[in-house]
Image (tube, rainbow, N blue to C red; front, side, top):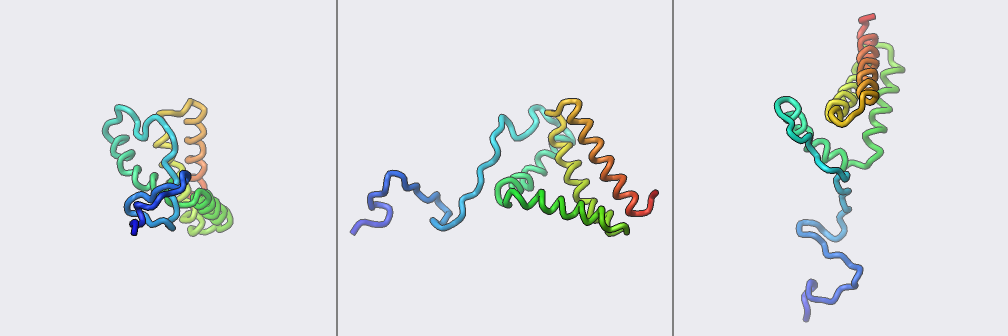
Length: 135
C-alpha cells in the first residue's frame, strides 16, 4: 500500500510545508520592498530597526490587519472622551506607536511627510499633557 506522500496528487494541490498541519491557517507574507532595514544604518537607528523587526513582523504577519488600527482608534477615542489622567494614559500608546512608525519611516519620507509626522506626534503629546493637567 502506498504511503500518504507516495499517492498521486491533484496538479493544483500544494504540499504542506514541514512543521505545519494541513488545517493550520496560512500566514500572510511580509510586505514587498527592496530592503527591510535602512542601508548603511549605524548607531541608534540600527539598534531600533533590529529591535523593532520582531514586533513589526509579528504585527504585519500574525495579527489580522484590522487589529492595530482598531486598537489605536479605540485608545484615541478613549483619550479624547476621558478628561482625567486616564485619558492621557489611553493616548500614550497611540503617541508611542505613531512616533515609532515615524522614526522607522523617516529616511524614506519627503519634507511634507516628515512635517506631518512631527505635527501628529506633537498634537498627541499635547493631548497627553492636557489630560495630566499641564495646561
